[in-house]
Length: 208
Image 1 (cartoon, one colour):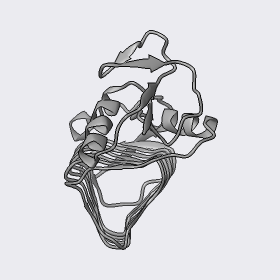
Image 2: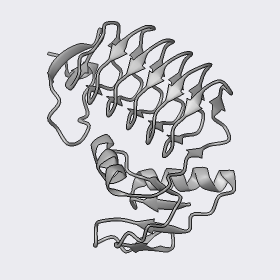
Image 3: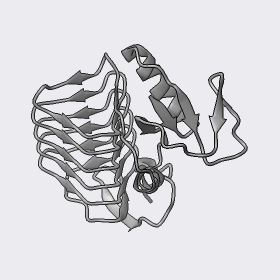
Image 4: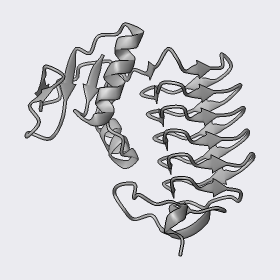
């Protein structure tokens, strides 16, 4: 397996692959200042090696790189994750230690289901979504492409969250969330349009 992105996220993916018995054969990164990753040299010129996982946590950047690369993408699923055999997981997706994906859930391409996150029955998680550590998504929830669900957020059953949203850490989502917004709090409320390139440290404590 090859990794694109010499990041902290790549460190976790490397551990997952090692636990699966899969060797990391090479690491690529666009940042010429990065020269070494876990004892390996970082290559700055993409050579079309495959399969590859885009090891970058930012949803928008992961999507941009995926569209640029013409190759086969792999997946990484930690052995401690609990995955229903009736669920589906798209290419490029990473499922981290202790995560749970329940019956008939659908996980898109290039998603991150982070440490101890829970995705319950019949959920539909779009491409390039990041479900952060400890987040709980109840049954029959839809999460749109490119959305970030913050650490420890709780999503009520049957909720629809739009595309390219950011749901703040610790939020409790009990109503549908439209496309392209930053929302947080308990109950979760839309606070602004999402125009930021990176997920902010938003949470219920920021509500005024």
